[in-house]
Length: 581
Image (cartoon, rainbow, N blue to C red; front, side):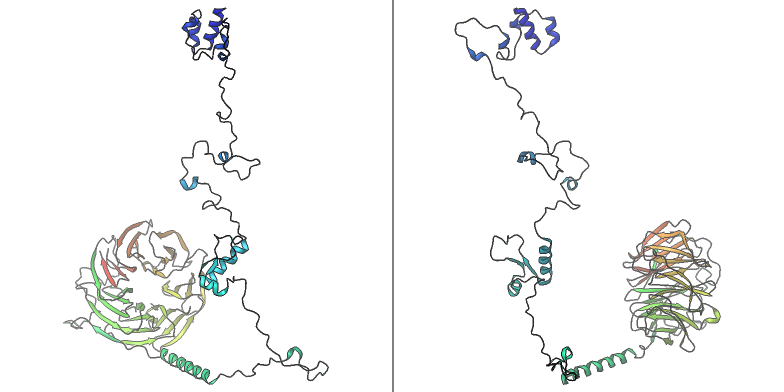
C-alpha cells in the first residue's frame, strides 16, 4: 500500500525520468512542495482527536480575473452594445506597436489633421456668431453656457457689443423708417384727376440741379481734369547728350563708330568662330548706371560697342575693347527705358521708354533725330532689318497692338491688332519677310510683313507667357524664355513647331523677361535668371553645363559676342554690366 502511495507521489513530482528509476525509494526521500498539497494522499493517522485543518477544502485556484480573459475593445470602435467599465474602455492597446508610424500618425485621428471632438453647436448658430465677429468684431463667449448664466458675455469688441445691444448680423436693429407720403390721388371715379399708385411723393423733386456749393466743387474738378489732360500732352522731355571721352575723333578723323583693327581679332569678318568655350571668370565691369539695366545691345556685325538702357532713364554707349570706357550718355526720357535697337549700320538706334515715347537717336553725335508716340507704353521696338526698309520701325505696345511707323514722315503706316494682351517681343524671321510676336496673352503669333492678320497662331493650354525671344545665329530656331522656368525652342522656318526634344531647364526666371542668347557656333545657350546667375546649357544635350553667380539682383540679359569664342556680356538690375571670358 505504502509503495503504491509513493509511486503516486513521485508521479506528482517534477522529473519523470528520475521517478522511473527510483520508483521504490521511500516517501521520506521525496521533497514535497507543501505538506497540505499531498495531505489527501496520505493515510489518516489513527489518533483520538483527528485535526480537520489538515484537509485544505479550498485550495488556491487560478482565478478568472488573474487570467486575461476580459473582453477587449477595438480602439477604432465607435459604438458598444453593453456597459464596459472605465478600465476596459481606457485600457492600453495590446499588440506590438507599428514602428513605422510617426507620433502624429499613431495618435487617434478622425480627420486628416487630427482628432476633432464633436461640438454641440448648431451650424446656424456657429455661422451667425462667426459672421457677427467678422463684421462687428464681437461674438458670444463660447466657453460660457448661456442656459446657466442669465447675462450674455461677449468676446472681442465688448464696447461695440454693448452699444449694439449684442445684435448679430442677421438681426437689424433699425426700426422701419416711416413710409414716404404720396400725394393724395383723388377719387377713382374721376378718370382725369385720379393718380392712384402713380402719384408722386410729397417730397419729390422734378429737376436735379446742383446747389451753389456743389456747382463750385464740380467746376473745380472739371478745371483740374482739363489741366491734367493738358499735362499729358506736353512735349517730350528735352534731349541732351554727354560725351565722356576727350576727343570725338581720332588723329585720322574717325569717330568711335569706326571698327578697331588692333584688338587681336577680325571684327569685320563674316565667319563665326569654329569652336566656342565656356566662359569661366569675370574680366570687366562697366558701372555707370545708377539703377537696374533693362537691356543691352551690341553694335551690329562688329560688336565693338555696347549700348545699354536703364531704369535711371539714361542710355549709355560703351567700348567693348581697349580701355572699355563709357563713350556717350543719351538723356531724353523722363521714365525708365525699356528697350533699344540699332539699325543695320549702327549709325542710329531706337529707344522705347515708359514715358510712352519712342525716340530715334544718332549714335555718333548723340542728337535725337525724331520721336514717335501713340500715348501708349511701348514694350519692344525693332527696325525692319531689310536694307530697303530701314525707314520702318515696329513697336509692341501696352494696348495689345503692334504699331508700324515710317521714320521719314513720323506717321503710323500699319497696325497689327490681333493680340489679347500687351505685346512683349517682336522677332524678324525668314529673311525678314515675317516676324514673330509674343504677348501676355500666352500666345505666339507669326505675321507677314505689312499684312495685319496673323497667318499663324500658336497657343496651347499648357503654354505660359514668353517675354523674351531670340533668333539663333543660323536663323533656324527661336529660343523663348517661358514663364514656367524653361526655355522653349520653336522652329523658325516654315512650320514654327515646338521642338519637344530641346527644352532647357534648371533656372528660376518666373516673372522676369531674361534675355536668352546662343553662342555663335550654336553649341551653347546662355540665359540669366532671377537669382542673378548666368546659366549655360549645351545645345545638343540640353544639359545645364555651367552656372556663375553674375549679379546681386536679377540677371536680365546675357549676350554672347558674335566674334569671340567665350566672351559673354551680362547685365543685371544691380546696375552693372559685366564681361565674362
